[in-house]
Length: 261
Image (cartoon, rainbow, N blue to C red):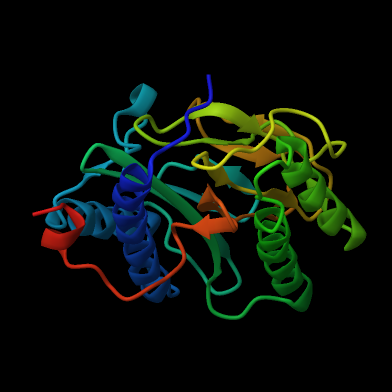
């Protein structure tokens, strides 16, 4: 069943998602050669807990960390580590979720480490733009498949591939709710979008072929051909007049205000 949230619920969700957005912005600034993904994870957990929130991923189905950090050919669900420092030319997807005042926020970006080649820059740009194209389809009366179709069209027009094994999702009082939101497909299919639905839309795009495999850790998904992958995510509500991007970067919210205190 797909939930439609009240205006009051969406206001609470906005607070959770603004916290996620602010933490993600701080993490982006911290990404430099020599930093480890374990360092980023420690920073993220501290910021989330200091704001009175709870990391959404840590302990979820046994996941061991606050962040999913996926480097280079890792697509999603990479486990943070202090073993290998990031180096110039890497890219790292940083995916974070938090629970605040009973509701979840979820967002992701992929960040270049130092200087990366032009084609890698294009991969990041096209993936980010495909998310923007998807968000533009979030409107009352639209269909879930319109979102994925917009992603697929944009990505494939630029010579990249859409990863199909992982999808976006509804979000609210649970981290993962209905509906599932593939990043590909024929438009005009699936559930009809209604005011108050809240969706985590997250294109995952490969530079080479779209096929992936999961490593022995049971979490980290990588491209089978070793090509680079990018991942961007926003949490978006269906508003009466169009999309409301709850993770859009706005004026910082104090921890007390965000927690409703």
